Length: 154
Image 1 (cartoon, rainbow, N blue to C red):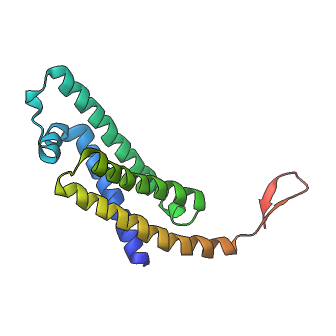
Image 2 (tube, helix red, strand yellow; image 1 turned 30 degrees about the vertical axis):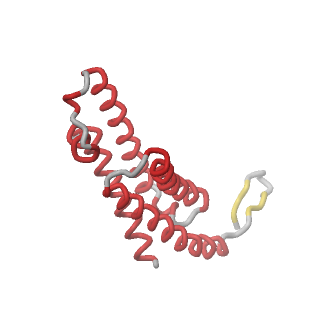
Image 3 (tube, one colour; image 1 turned 30 degrees about the horizontal axis):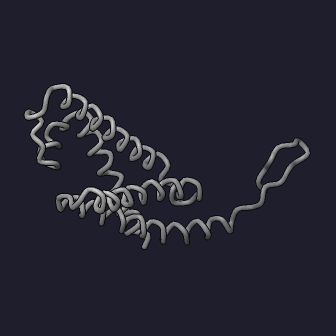
């Protein structure tokens, strides 16, 4: 289970980092053609510029979430607040894809692959980390107030 949880975590995060940098700085125009079959040369220049600006911004947000996940991998796999944040954002991405399916219609097949991969990842990481967090939490000592007035762990 540990291997699968980390495998899905690192492939998900790795793809976010690569896709984020690619979409923000290199291939925004190409993504429009490959992912959306959108020929931006058919749009007026303001619409193209506005759409690509927003796309680049969102891709960099994707990169930022990947960077957060790499920077706090240990915490995501061991501390409840980091774990909940990471899994919530990951799950909300799956939920957004599901809402879009019903609200907007059927996307290209690659988007089903993304959603499936993300859902399996959320489930595996959730199952693995819940066991680990409970196990690690049992070893933590309670907080106490010392004569200095500061909270300390014993």
